[in-house]
Every structure is written in C-alpha cells, then in structure tokens.
Length: 220
Image (cartoon, rainbow, N blue to C red; front, side, top):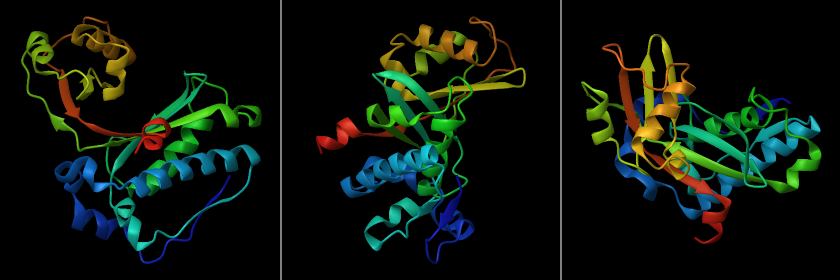
C-alpha cells in the first residue's frame, strides 16, 4: 500500500520548532472529541486500505483539527475478540500526530513480527486503541526499590534501558500487570534481560499517555 499526502501548508520541521513540548503541558484537553473520532476513523481506513492493497490518501486537515498536525509520538493497538492482534508505536515526536498514527496503524496491522498480517475476514472484528504519548522524562533512581517506589500504577509508562537493550510498557499494561514489581519484571524480560536484572548501567524514563479507544469515544 502506498500513502499519498493531500495536506496543505504543513512543514514538520517548523511544527517541531514551534510546538515542542506543548503536548506535555496541555495533556488530554488538547484533543477534542472530533479529533479523537477522526484519528480512530483514519486508523481503521489505513488498515482497510492495506488489506485491499489500495493507495491511502491522507486527507487535508481542517482548521478544526489543527492539533493533529502538531508533533507527537503514538502507539496503535489492535485487538480481535479482546486479544492483542498488533501493537506498534514510536517514543519520540519526530512527525505530526496524524502521520504517527497513520504509520503505526499500518505497521501494527501488517508489520508486527509477533502476528500474521491482518486479513480481510478480521476487519469487522478489529478494535482500535490509540495512545498519544507525552515526552519521556528521565527517572533518576539508584536502585530497583527506589524505582518501584516512584512508579505510579495506571499513570506511568516506563522505558527500561540496559546493556544496549530497550523496551517499554504503555500505561495501559498496568491493567494486566497491576503490581509494580510484576510490571518491571515483565518489562525487563521484554527487553531480553533477566527478570531481576539491575546494574549501574540501568536508565529509566517515564511518560504518560492519552488513550483514545472506540469504547471510550462512544461514551464522550
């Protein structure tokens, strides 16, 4: 599938320079109900186009949705029958939010190495969840105990780096791994490390996420 861009007068470079860090300040109230509905609709259309091997044309963004042109990082999670079907994202705001969501929607559906590409017979059953990330901030800790004390369940996403490896869990993962110790152990395993790994080379970063889902949006 090819992407074409019909947006007018948008420069990613100038947007980053002008708007860096504003997502962190304004948080969830930056995105209207209309913005959220549009992002979910575009995510679904990208996946449908990918299954059909059609070209997807990114629409021009009207003045009522200008926040979507601002830089932001995102993750897109696909579920089928309440089971994970794909999840891909980026941790740095190196493109506009709309471009990030479009790219990650396609990658989650067709390039997540844990799953086969989404099929046409699965489209009607897919549910979509978009997480818009705030900029990651270093969490200065000297021990595992200190990290566990500072982590905020259901609020913080965590990036764990050590020995040249890196992995992250979104805040939504707290729904399955409710205890900080369990959350951390599974994250270290995801990074390819021992579940109890700790050393002076450990680096931790936390971020928050604005979650947009079809279920939540139906209630707004």
